[in-house]
Length: 75
Length: 564
Ligand SMILES: Cc1cc2nc3c(=O)[nH]c(=O)nc-3n(C[C@H](O)[C@H](O)[C@H](O)COP(=O)(O)OP(=O)(O)OC[C@H]3O[C@@H](n4cnc5c(N)ncnc54)[C@H](O)[C@@H]3O)c2cc1C
Image (tube, rainbow over all chains, first blue to last red):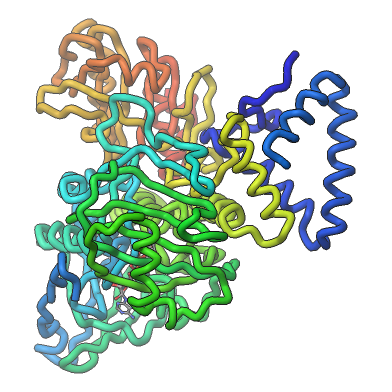
């Protein structure tokens, strides 16, 4: 399975009436996870988060694809 | 003074209490505040036969540039009040919003991509035009007593109603009322006089609003820029309003000097930079605002109800202010009417604060999320925000995360105790508690839209293929619902034919009603007076309908066995 780049956020058992709601909910949770951290602490949190999610995804081909896309336009 | 608009001056008249002094007037309902929401409330109640005393401390409409965007649902409510068309005629209708990051478009949305809806996703209309039209509509209703320059200075409330002291150019007078509706805005004096709190968050940001008159052929779309070259590091929002007046919101940040920023010599170069050419324009209005997201814990205190900004406030990015205020009275008016008529218990009125409180939470949630995206509060949020915008050019998932404002849409009141839970299977969004979708119809009276025949009373939509095929017994049962204590008007929705027994029939000409309501022959929807779904079934059963009406009005539910 290739990397999913279509909108893919949802929460099992939860009903959304607006397309934007699940993504907004994730984004809010992400910012909340960083609340009251220093920039350095936030960078650490991001690193740990990437590692946790990467292990969850597991498929290294997908992870390589994501890393390549993230690298684009980053220089 | 605006070049495109003259503020009306509404006439003050000496109130009857001051013509025959010593007499304290007694009224069934007093509404305080003739802003959009107070006017809507008064019209809603008056149109349902309730006489209303409406007091406002000013004698004109909203000054300067405030509300701009009025959403589909607000227009549908205004249609029910009899003044939607005049708003649409004067306003600028639009559906598409475009979002730019630096100098590139990264995302666009369409508020109403479905065909076959009467009203557009949004209109832009200066708040003063909206209010002037509401005042005109109120003037057509003889049971609204609208008093300008009547300032409410004190209030007491108890079991038996409320007593107000009102200041006028001719002196003070007192009125008592069974029900008081406070629509006196964000700084609600009544809220303070009753010692009630409103809690929430103030955002550390400032926005410059400029109304500009110019000839421009930009399409009628909302445009939003993150970090544009002409206003680096901040956001900018552009809307076209009526009469070639363009509204621009420049984000300024917290550290600016508002007085300095309002000076034309500061504002004009900002507008010039946005336009990027030397077309002529005239500055019509400038102000600087901050905003907050907050709500009262309860919108009801005994005989006093709070509606609109008095009850809740949001940041303006979702245009959820006045839009949600109209939904407040949409929710309250029919309940109050039923209680006043002795057809529902007082407890029905508590569901106003339950339902609209849930909606206020949803509005505050969405407005807060937008604000946090637009005004990142830390380096990390800014980093994520710009990463989303950077990815949005290429990747659909990131476009869905771009949040330049989630524009006002009505809440689905799915948790309301007025709903009868589904016992049959249905697809789609028209769940109990849903605001009902519009769709085209053909009807003997010439009506063209479903919502134009719904509202102000309970109604039952009964779906069949051929209305003429309904048997006499079913037709008589459907018709008899109109004779119940809380009357229910049956409406047959068919592809063809006319129903017997003089039952009202409409034709689902485009098949959109069946599609949007997942209706099959026999499907029955119970609609509330505010065009929300109360209950639905696959088969019409009058006993279930009566139970659902009882649930939706807070009345004791008749025992199924006894009733059958
Ligand atoms: C910059 C900006 C942009 C906005 N954009 C939008 C938008 O696009 N869409 C949208 O829906 N909303 C928008 N809003 C919000 C909208 O303006 C408010 O939600 C709306 O005005 C609320 O209406 P209201 O009737 O509750 O209160 P108000 O409009 O504040 O009216 C209150 C009325 O009560 C009267 N009053 C007050 N005290 C007393 C008293 N003691 N006695 C008698 N009368 C009294 C006042 O004179 C006034 O007429 C915006 C607001 C701002 C500031």
